[in-house]
Image (cartoon, rainbow, N blue to C red; front, side, top):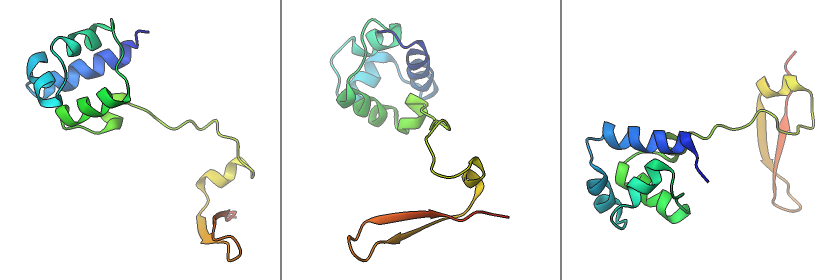
Length: 105
């Protein structure tokens, strides 16, 4: 499955770092020609190779994957809580973390 945005970002980060495909493969410990296949979308990397690419590019996962959290989450309170302070405390009985959203007036 081709993810054009991933392919574009991989190439952009590699070129920004001044690396050839072969240099990135060596730095990341990946087999020859794999970066080329990722950049063209003919292969998709698994988690282990994504981690290797991140190390080889010396970037963050967000820079490579450009993952943004979805605001479409289910929430127990009104939408106004997204801007409200959140307090975490431990439930004395279970020791579990409990999150409480304070409503801002």
